[in-house]
Image 1 (cartoon, rainbow, N blue to C red):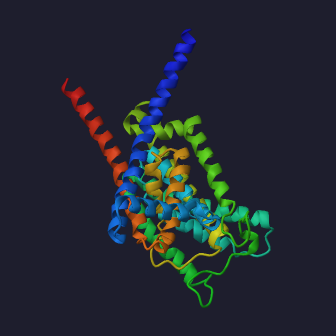
Image 2 (cartoon, one colour):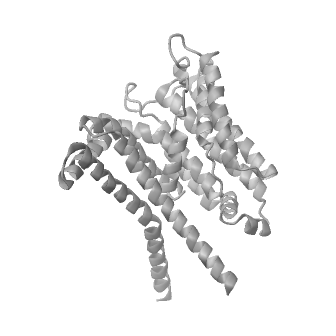
Image 3 (cartoon, rainbow, N blue to C red):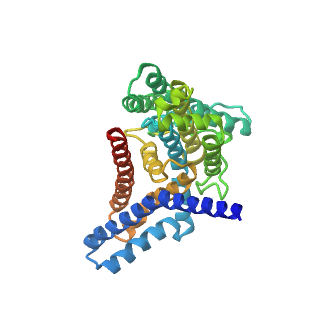
Length: 365
């Protein structure tokens, strides 16, 4: 009897927690779509019902409606899994690793460089490409992580600067040693360095998607089932309390940045090895790292949530070109994404204000 009662209480608590976690992201998505309907109404001079039907039809067709569009949705979500996970690890440790963009670029560069080395058997070559991206990303993130832990400098400022350095380092190699004549890109990586495309060679979805999904569960296990993950989350919740409990905050700050950078670098390498097979000359950022911020925020920095939020943002990005077929400006997609981010951020602000008010009440008691 007692056991059943305890189980019911535990189950109810779990359901309540799930509702609390999912409520704001779902509301944010619905509000984003709702506001976008009015822009469609204005752009096409339609009523609310027709505007809603047109928008949802366009997004559905561009995301899941046709085989080719669904494949491109999977292609678009793959790098977002990696960058969303990278941000989630940093957020869980109380860090804002805005340098995921630069770490992703360094992973791409590593793949482009290692992918051109001849004479390596395919399984080993692909492995070296992915390891190279992982290492390049980890090292690139370790620098601001070390400065944050040892010197106390702000990781946001340092990682922003590292993004620009990464872009220019990549361009140096793409324009120079590995440049392909007559193009604004590097030479194509060798076939032995390419990830397997499991539908057909012409369809770009590849095993990088499965690597990303597997990594989701690895990161979940790391954060919630290991001592390392416990320490990372403890530092993120309260660094000073973690120090008082015997946890080395400086070590865990560096470790979190290294793990975050390694994931981003691996994503960049997988993107080159599986999807584009070369590194492009960059006149601006790829934006995969920045889109990963939105993915992580919508997922509430939970690895499993990253799978669904990356699918959402990947689907929206994929449907942007189909919207034009319906004579809807593709900027509607960015409006939806922006509104989602605003409302998810509002949830964080609400919780911060609530916590602040609670602390003041305790202090004045």
